[in-house]
Amino acid sequence: MYKLVILLAASFLCCQSPYVQKGTENVVLFDTVANDSFEIRIDNYRQRDVKGSYDTIIFYFDASLKAGNYLRKFFNDSVHSNTLLVGIAHFGNYREKRRRDLMADNNHMNHLLDSGIVPYIQAHYGWADERIIVGHSFGGLWVYRDFFAADTLFTTFIAVSPSLWVEGTLMPSEYAKRRGKENLRTLYMYWGGGEEFNYVKGACHRAKKEIDADSMLRVKIPMRELKGETHNTTLTPAMESFFGR
Image (cartoon, rainbow, N blue to C red; front, side):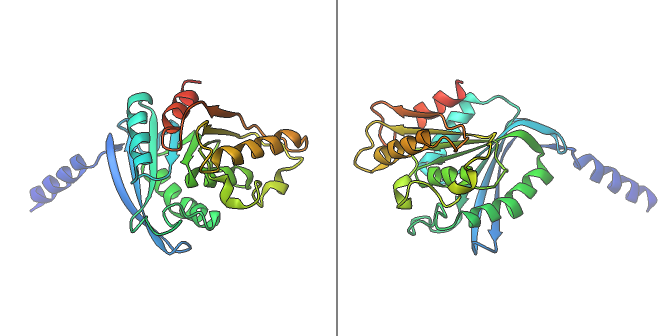
């Protein structure tokens, strides 16, 4: 009997690993504030100690859409091994108006991040000093708004073809809070030169003009118009521009 217990204990210990396996994990998290479930896709490029740290963690929206598929392909071909990718996707019917991006209230997504995604990542994978958030279209609008908010989860923000026209006013409600205060984080904005008909180009131009004209807004927002690109083609040159920095 004692031999059997010892053998079982040894077998159990052998099956336990202090390392997170290299590969992909899909986790479904329910958020009480958003009252919705989200599928979180985690791509780990290195087998490592659970309590170890990564150089970079890249968060991105639309993990279940074409934009998410493209970003994963780009990152798979480009990032180094000490990087963790965290994709956020709706588990249900993303085609419901504005539902897939949760743009109605930034606080919903912030709650999901703070109470669900971040604790899970920290407990099972580790953390990083550099934390990047990438958003395209409505996801880019979320990134833009979050940059001006008081949230300090991310260190770098990348908004590609952000739908700033949705706001009605170019500046988010948090804009006034940032005037006169130093912001050490950086927002990178990209949009296509061919995005006239979806109002993205015009809205980004007006935002740039207002930001440049406000001497009290001490923020770092490098902006670039991608010549000849449209709403569906901006991700490639935007990512190449940023990660080739």
